[in-house]
Length: 259
Length: 247
Image 1: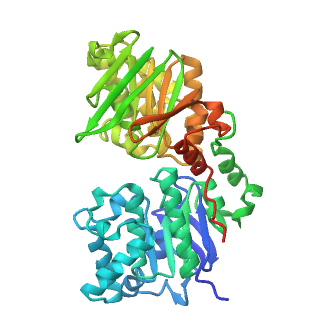
Image 2 (image 1 turned 90 degrees about the horizontal axis):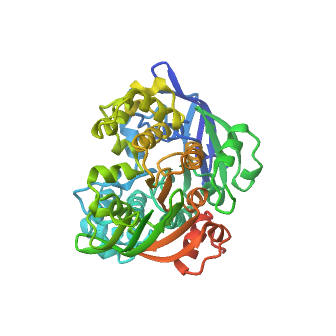
Image 3 (image 1 turned 30 degrees about the horizontal axis):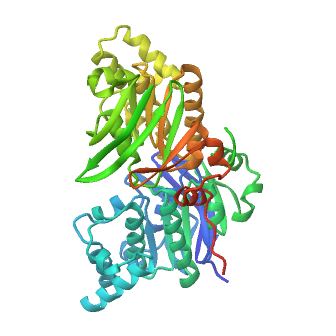
């Protein structure tokens, strides 16, 4: 079986400062977590795959393949065709990712018309179906709402509905639940879980929350200061050996444990 | 020390805080847990005087809180927000941010006070000329706490103080807050949706839902999962992480 995404020796630098130092990994249609502290370089890896690095950053890699496509050789036009259509991207805070002056449904329809060339009526029907598929009750009502009228959890699910409009093979979710309270976070994860299982999508889940990742993902990669220092099955995270992973595990506040 | 009785607050005509009562003794630590939109942050703001109360009473050492002027209230209690990026002036250095409360209150010996406040939160004196964007998230939150301590308040109102931080910075901040309370006897009113964080920092909690307190329990009972209200039980369940549905 060939991998959905293969990355070899990825470096991302800001001038002389190297933020990602030779990251290599391959993933299939699975839930793969990329965990680490703030500034470890995990978001930059997600951005490098999409070739949406912040200004001032430069990247090199020995290899970067997505489903047989050489991303390093892809031009701006090819990348635009991939983004949203075959590789989706969900960010931490829906407040900043959704267009504040467009209703939620219109934004989902825009994606459908752009990527799937649906006409107006078909786009509306499909948009309602997508909103329903991310467990938004009363899709017709949500369709007409503007982002400021949504709670954080609803906004994030609307964002996922938008990303699904392109029917991507890979979804890069960068801290998709960190801005949400625990209940809303679990609901967003359940939606993602369902989509991976039903559509056979690959999910690169970027997070700093080990407790969440442990129960949710299939595999975990731990990144420290730009290097992937450990990789293991999520279920075996408790037995991880690398000192940095141990530090992250030990730093988790536990409800059951006395201070 | 502080007592709220049937305190209410309204936003846009809706009762966001609905007849909430609690008491905090000197040096104690009390937590309020609830989901987004449960009214817990608005409750803190009402206590700090940032949101007008719409009913009920708030007393400080037996006297009405409203009898205290804004300045006097500031010396008794201080608020620390979730995101220090929003509460620190982007074009003021750390030193200026810390000096400001002392200047407003006409305190002398400001350089010594600033140095002491930085020391108390474990930040070196060399950071005093930095701007907020030159600090990490954890350092910024320490600056916000140092500023809150400048007037030596007796109560800190903490609004999700660690939820913008990663797990390592969060653990350091929890340890700092534990130490500050032990050393200074400052009382905390901590609001958070993160039960595991709350359990590290308080003696007792109240659970808020739609503006009301639906259950109160000691922190040991929270840890042991000995709650009765279904909403508290669902919060405890959610805090344990993701469980895949069978089948």
